Image (cartoon, rainbow, N blue to C red; front, side, top):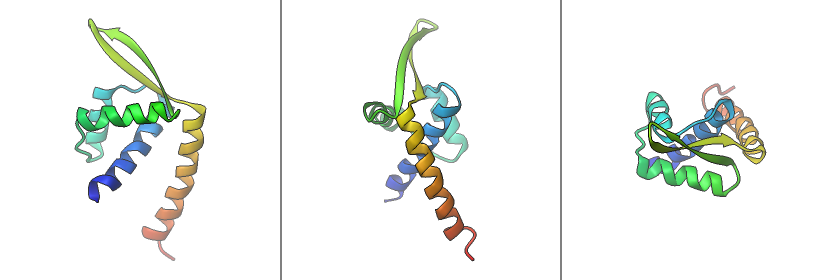
Length: 100
């Protein structure tokens, strides 16, 4: 159950960072690690693929140091989803962290 909840937060982090700039797998693993998430390629890459197939991310492959690297950006649908999640996060924060 903990992993399911963390994966939901990870997806929101991915969308957030993809809105700010292009993201790629290894960079995301490092970024998420800084937030306390222990995520490996076996979880991250299928998650990115699901977000892409769902229309929330676009992907562009480029060669970097003779290796293929996939770069992801948020789509308009991803922005709509992220903005909806922001509202839900704010509501949850108000209820859980700052109860009246």
